Length: 360
Image 1 (cartoon, rainbow, N blue to C red):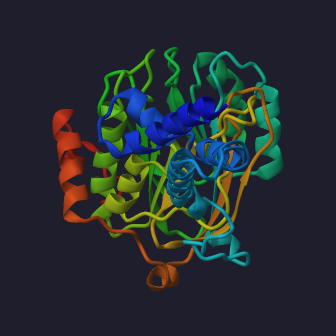
Image 2 (image 1 turned 180 degrees about the vertical axis):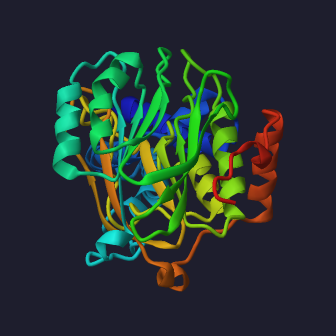
């Protein structure tokens, strides 16, 4: 039993330390995902170590200290996404209706045929904007019934699991679909006009994940996030970036995106809102995201019910609150992070100038 505990502790330590290496290989970057699960494994190992290894053995103290170190490291990443942390974005439940911006993001899973269930969720929650990922021509045919109430659309049906659609009640200006890093992976960009007349710069993203079946490295995903971040940080407009980023909220690369862009995460201090995988409760991570500039406060954020996909939809209600800018601190980068971001973009030969700037 002591040997088993030592082996398990060694594997836990390796899984904790390996992501510190900035290597983009999927085996390394994939360990950013299960930080909560690894923390739970550490918690399970501690009582086993206490009760099954004699305290007089040096092995006991080694494995216990290593496990406690792993636990603290994993919690350091995930605790901000719990109610134990101070909320990064101010709560604003009483915003004027004309200042509201409600966005539903839904990765539909291309083979899923429960379009009626998703349409029912749209009817119930009445988002201003619906963003769908993995939507092909079949999904477009089903979703086009929304155009009666959501006439402003951007459509890119694809059969490669990277189709994307935007349906909006609010006017969309300068809408554009762009392939930023990979020729078959689209992103969408537009200026959203609120009922108040205020303009919001919006970017809808779905970069490919690092995986043995798609991209063996995260380099393409990371480059897309980096160049969008560099593009929006210079904008004086209110900004929203949303989509399935195929990265967890607490990863080093998502944190780099937030620091480069200066955008806020309304989940910090409120919850993880794990949207994937919908069918396996123990293997759930926050893959669907919404980030915004300091011009907004948040009215609510919630994970919506299952609709047949491997993702749950995410519904975020923002309130345009320009006077909140000075009360909300934006993240910032250091020199090392800027250098890392520069190398990521240069490797993929893409820059911030490649990102559309609607309204600028």
